[in-house]
Length: 171
Image (cartoon, rainbow, N blue to C red; front, side):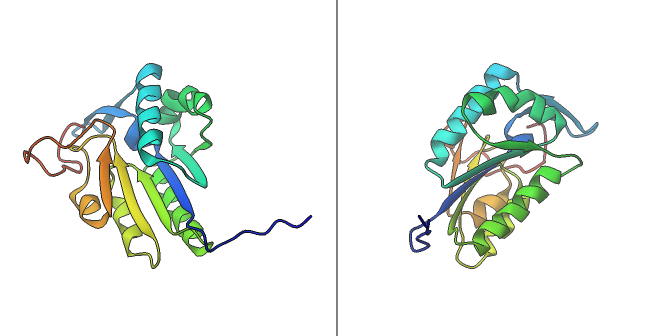
């Protein structure tokens, strides 16, 4: 029996930046992060997966501390994931994965992150970018502008008080 893939069907991927999703507070002056506990991690990851919707491929990547905060939630939700090492290594690995998927017939990527590094995916030919960010306050303006749509785990956007903050403060 031969298995053939119908590449004419839309193929969607969900790529989850655990470092961004599971940071609950940050002291930018000292580069210190405070991570979600297991209950918060499960709540955030559940909501993110729900908002992202169906996917043909899902991957969560994070550094050591976000991995420790989120591994039980990943297992409970049956979300594949990997741990990586180094500053911005989760973003780098997920960007590389997105490019690879685009080259192999995926036409839509939902990124679970508020990091502006993912805005470049909107420039990939034939790839539609959507975003599920942790909060509006910690979502890069560049990412909001580049994405086809943006939702947040924290809920609807409050008024017009702030359009996204990137790394301007404590997120």
